[in-house]
Amino acid sequence: MNSALKWKLIAGFVLVFLAGGATGVFMSATTAHHFFGAHRHGFAAQAMKTRLQWQLRLTDEQMGKISPIIEKTGAQLEQIRGDTGRRVRETIAESHREIAPILTPEQQQRLKEMEARHRRWFQHHRPGRFTPAPETSPE
Image 1 (cartoon, rainbow, N blue to C red):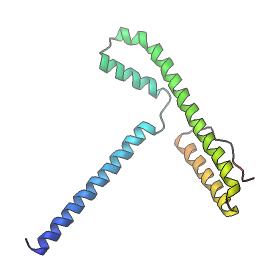
Image 2: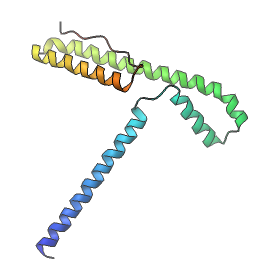
Image 3: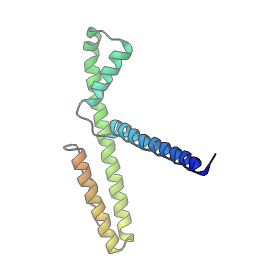
Image 4: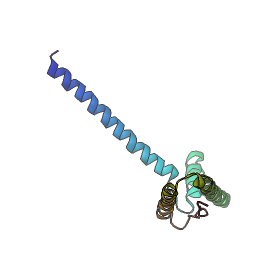
């Protein structure tokens, strides 16, 4: 095998590896958005109904009877999701309040900017559902 052919094979393997990596990143991002992205109101209940109807082969009569139960469960799950998100934001805000006194004034300013960017991102990606954590102060 000559040197040119060896380098072409190596380049081909590297390209295939990079293409596989790019595909993996794309698929991971798509899957993550599906599981962790913003969901419209009633998403959990609708997903449960669809899954149960398909897997259990429920009749229309059965669906009518279990729909109120699923709607109630979906509302409870949305409440839990909102409460969990709020608790996470409050915990992070508390850690920032504890960290701030240790930082230099420049670092405190950067921390405030990070928090502002985070709030803007959340407001953009979850409009109407974001409850901001309390403001942190470097005092």
